[in-house]
Length: 320
Figure 1 (cartoon, rainbow, N blue to C red):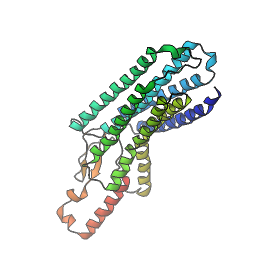
Figure 2: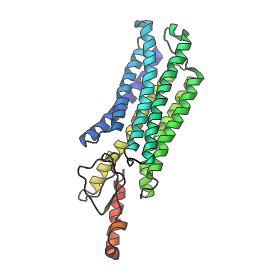
Figure 3: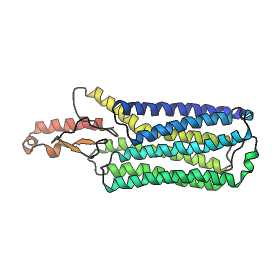
Figure 4: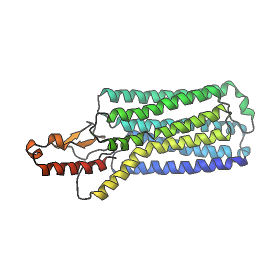
């Protein structure tokens, strides 16, 4: 299939980028000893993404040398590995948000139930491919077998993708609603999580090609969506690391706290000038509130107020 060349190039490039970004994320978390469930799902998504690329290469290049049963198996592998990458990436983003919440709160329980729902949706989409393709097995006799997934699969993908990404965008807004931060700080954090909208756009394109009859364009859209989902899942950690380095370069001599996604303190000690936004050892968010915790006698001095404002300005740059 000569026209499969560009599809493979796109798949290889995006997969390499996704693997590099995920590996970088895992190295950061491993070095800081902050590995958690969100990292496990990201690693699993990376493995599935590599397996998807291998299956694509075998399916698109020199498929004539394989027996018909192998070609059919390769198609099923592509279809299922695609779902595995997309939903493992969504679960990684969701658990990144979960680790920032306080244990025992209603919001954390809702997010945990949402994670279970994501798993159920993944299982249903996994099963839908089988019952749609097995109900009409005539496609298996084609030289290059590809199941006509039809309108039902496309509609299911649109609904689940839009709702899933909407939850991943809405949850950080609810988490940061009562946190005392400037608008610039909140926008910086929310923009990272809102990158899930990119996955939604790509998934709509993929669903359109399923509607229009599939072919190589459907395969290419699936590769792009899978790799973009994995890249977006790692943005929160990578962007946090970049802003952390930037803050250290700008203020190397200060010890102002850095808020990162999924941070974990080495030692627990009480600080009258700090407010912990979470009780999870694996995910404290430290926000200094000097205006409420300093003695009134210190507030009476204009010089002290100016120094407090300068310090708050530095902390704003540290928010990732």
